[in-house]
Amino acid sequence: MRRSLFRAPFLPYLLVAPQLLLTLVFFYWPALQGIYQSFLIQDPFGLRTSFAGLANFASVLGDPLYGNALRVTVLFSGAVVAGAMLLGLVLAAAAAQPLRGVQVYRTLLVWPYAVAPAVAAALWLFLAHPSVGIVGRALVRSGVGWDYTLNGSHALLLVVVASVWSRVAYNFVFFLAGLQSIPSSLHEAAQVDGATWFQSFRQVTLPLLAPTTFFLLVVNALYALFDTFAVIHALTKGGPGKATETLIYKVYVDGVVNLNLGSSSAQSVILLVLAVVLTSFQFRFLERRVHYA
Amino acid sequence: MRGFGRAPNPTGAVAVPAPLAGSLRWRVRRGLRFLPAHVVLLAGVALFVFPVYVAFVASTADLPEVTSGTLRLLPGPHAAENYWKAFVAGTGERIRGIPMARAMLNSLVVALGIALGKIALSLLSAYGIVFFDFRWRAPAFWLIFLTLMLPVEVRIIPTYKVASDLGLVNTYTGLIVPLTVSATGTLLFRQFFLTVPDELVDAAKIDGAGPLRFLWSVLLPVSRTTVAALFVVLFIYGWNQYLWPLLVTTSLEKEVVVVAITKMIGTGEALVDWPVIMASALLALLPPTVVIVAMQRWFVQGLTETEK
Image (cartoon, each protein chain N blue to C red):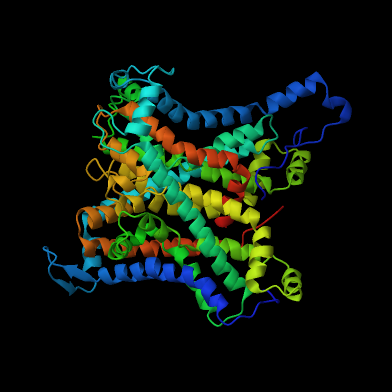
């Protein structure tokens, strides 16, 4: 805390008022509304609303389609987090070397962050389309029977690829920043001790990257859970069948398309709890971030 | 972390004895040692450039060539007409849409509105919280801080309800304002303000400067890089928003580019006008790319510091 402060009777309130007001109107009020809605049930014509206790939650959790969405989300998020982090780390490890032209590489690997997930989805749709896309046609010709519009596994693979593709740059930025904050003297010491590059990477670099890795794990999980809505909406709309319907996509379909507000709100509340748990993990480690530079 | 500006050590990670450094043998050995890194990086760059290059080729071809699947990997002669259709006319085979010129204008307004709005709101609130002693300081901070836990996606439907009750559907205000509140900016400015030396405040007081004068003439100038870093990150964030604009706009007039593109694709029929769509996609990713490449140093700083 600062020692030297200004004193003014009204000014500080005026300074925080705009943000607080908007926060109350667009954050807390809707969040409370959502929680309230999740305890209400509407008749099919939307004429009467009555208090339902935990009935919405019970029917959501007992719904096999929700189980399916959960399974899809776990598979999808696991693959996206692992893929984006692994690629980001490998590229950052290479780009941290004292190479000729390394700045050009770095720029070329950072810019994909500019591509919106929905635009990334459009690009991959065009590549993977079974009758139009270059990659899609090649797969069909090689006898894979590729068609993401009919085959659920193909569809899931495609949304994973597009989501990873649009997320690698983010991981690259953080891993590279983490790698650059490790003093080179540590690697030199390892080399003097006769360690190979790989040994020194495993035993010096990776442990020192642990805080970055953990942070990215949480943030990427949040990305996979929530921000990939655009990719799925643009590529598969949750289909074919329900093969790519993740939890967040189901909230949208049930709330906006099917207008089942009670169920959609209950699902939102479950996701909200998940988000709170994940972000509190993030805060816990936020304080302990280690700086070596 | 201050960007990626650190110059690479020109002799490699390990110091080399002077007589050896210039010799051909050493240079070959050094080249071989870094060969795997070059290969990895080139593969990575190819992975990111390839889809964009294919989209570029398609945007210069004509529709029959694309739908027949005979697209070659060299630019064709139809660029002008495709980009004109996409940017000015907003039409194409089986496409219902708006000119990209209009959609990009919408995206620009939204992205700038979100970035500048968020910076202004969070700068003021962080200033109030850090530099003043007042009764509701701690509750105000926590109310702002906790919004980090509520991503827009999980409260999307009730937020839409609020926006529609306030008459904000199909307005720029509705597209911008609900996305200008979040804690990241406030936290970043707070973190930075806490490092501003007390002497600066004392000096301002001695010179008779009031709190607003201090904010404008002392604090803002020293916050320049923080503002620039935040601006880049927020501009990209605003330009790439999808779910909220999808809900809060129903008229074509106010559609933002990313939504416009996926609406053009629709259900992904083979016969849809791919050259025009790919031209639109490339137009949509141009502005944020220019911002990132031109302001890379601030972008990296902003990204790694807002998320910490």
